[in-house]
Length: 174
Image (tube, rainbow, N blue to C red; front, top):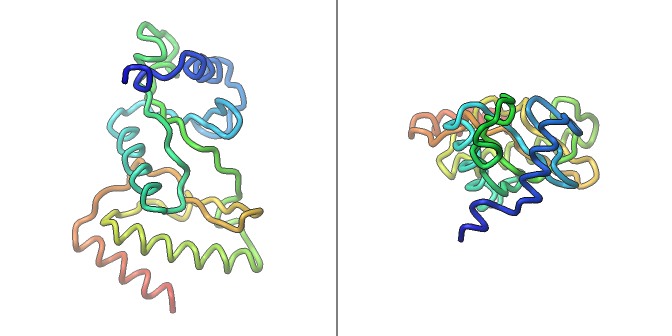
C-alpha cells in the first residue's frame, strides 16, 4: 500500500523538522521525532539498510533491541535537499532510555551481564555475528533489561565466525 511506503505526511514533516532544527538531538545523527520514537541517520544506504533489516530480524526473534518502524529514503524527505542531513537514509525506531552497559554497577551489573550473554547466544543461534557490541548496549534501570543498539556492521556469520562467538561465550560464562 502506497500510504504505508510513503508514511503519513505529519511524521515525515516531524522528521524533517527534527533534523533541520536539531531538535532534541540525542546522539550522533540521532533525533527525537516524537515521544518514544527516534530517527537514526546514515549517509551510506547499504549500512542503514543492513541495520534496519538486522534490527527487524532480531526484534521478530525476541532479541532485546529497539523496534524498527520504517526505513526512509532521503528522496521521501526532500528530493531537492541542499541540507546534507536531509540527504541521509533514516531509520525510525523505538527510543530506548538507559545507561551504557559499561556504566552499570552493583547488582544491576550482574543482571545486565547475565542478559548480555544470554542475548548474544540467541543472536548467534540466528547466525548473526555482532560487531562492536559492548559499546552499543543500553541498560534500562527501571525495567532491569538490556537493549542492543547500532547494528549497521552486524552480519550473517560464517560457521567459523559463529563457532568463535560460541567459544568466547563459553569462556565468558565461567
